[in-house]
Length: 367
Image: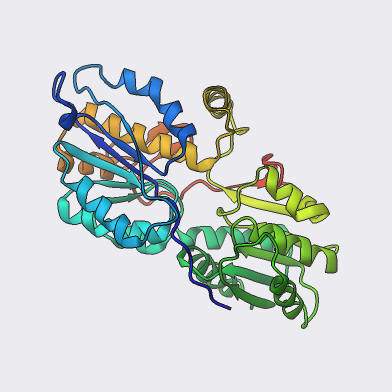
């Protein structure tokens, strides 16, 4: 079952060097996905960027919303790439839009820092593109390892969304399972759902269980799809465990929509506010300023901006030198220490963790 996926809201952040007390055309710009919470949180940080030796100022722009088309996304990127003084971009929100606009910034010689898109194709877009998180292969291997080794699953079913994110997670997971000698028990691909739990989802779930009940279900899904699948499968298979990829946000709606089976769900994350004191401080300050509990996307966007600012201050406002600085992190330079962990763009494995449906870290020995 395939459906056309509506345009997601775009996350885009551009950082420009400000020459002295410069005019507005020379001022640093951050264009985000229209989330005012993020915008308000960046305001106090923006003031500190005006300090010498390389003052940088951050402003907020709303990017095209869900009613647009990808040509609008592309046009916006083409406009931003021409801004005077542009030295780097942080975005986009998902793999599809990143792959659409990436060539624009590569051709312009502008570093593109990608906070939380996972498509493996992103890392092959060129030397000006810097992926902050694990790609599909790495995350798929993590999911397969949790399902097969940590949870001891042998009958492992997979549900995945038919977009770049879902297909990538599916491919990476199947590849890793095959290396363990495990063939998926059942595989269900589905299109983006506009309703919380449409009637045809029950038919999909029923079909996935015709062969028998699985031990573990892996989800390359987003909310509310994941919650619907967990609730429906959980009602039929009371002992099955669920492991979801990073597209599932472990906050309030997930628990409510997944029902009792939420107790048996683990979610892969790149960052968690309960992980350490720095993360907890960031989460408290963010919520106090915005009224919104930050998710991993907010933290990764924040670190993406900070690492570009660090580059400007270290090597100056030259996009090529900034790209070199980013490539050297974790190699000839120490990683940049952000709230989401050490940031580098070498060959080091990326950080992945598990949380439960309440967003609480799962102990390494948890089961």
